[in-house]
Length: 442
Image: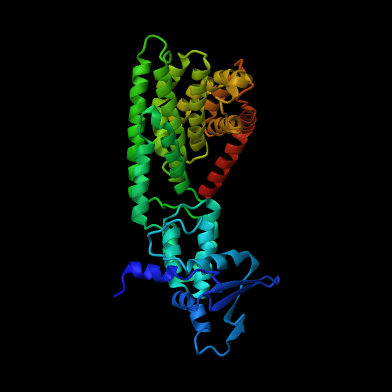
């Protein structure tokens, strides 16, 4: 048996373009009229490429003679011309996996792979597939691979291994690990990693052009609830400590960081709970914690850091009140009235502070405000008020009309509806009573 070294030596004795030893001319031709001659060796071409083996065999019906040599025409597109040249050069190279720098990038390897499949060069196909399967792809290269490789048959399939759908159990496992980390309290140095994980979790369960990656069942919801409850427990422990502080609770940087971090996490978890349709977990917690939260925030100073924390608390409250106001989560009348009475005064006093702070260009980047926050919050207040008993509505509206912060939230819509309902109430209810009496008499 010939040694590998002997085989390498045998191949390297033939050099592409060496006219003194060449016995074949390969004509690369395009529709644009390009016609390049490559002086090659039939021994190399036949051994490594089915296309050339067929055309240089005795069974091929016609054999062209050019420059006293056999001639084989290869037609290609102008855009693929260089890939054909590179492939023919590679036929002269020992491709045994010991050399990795033959491909000069993903695009070049992909182009050579297409030509290798077309001409039937199994050794080069394998080498291209191995390279593409292991190489890092840019986004544009990945799209190109998705367009080309599926057309190349089973031999090129390994290239697509990283793009194949994952089984559901693997998705569930990574979701569970991610939600546990995203609701934890890692060191400050890991904040960016945690934020990135939160973004990907939200992406996993969001329906866009594609269906969500994960369909939440009871087990997933249970795991999320467990993680959320642990987050709420840690936040509640902080609230207890801060609310018992006789001095200003948000006077040091550590407390400010912790409070802001918890509010950021709670604001993010709103998106997850809404998509999983388990928003009740947050609403019930926020109802129980609101008194402590408002107490701590009311004792805070007017520094930009504390104002930012107040804004984040209002953002969470907006989502909670929206869930209550539009019936996503059903609470008893007493609880709806209580949470509204707690947050309405806080919001109306805090909004001017936030507005004033945002006028300062230096603070504008810190106080990133959703443009629809105030309108959404106002609409939620109106919806909650209009769902209260009429007497409670009157109490809330009386306080609003006599308050110096009457401008926001603007409860005019609630006032108008209350006036109309109150004015026609006797008549409407008497009609209902008459109809009821008539029904009973029949």
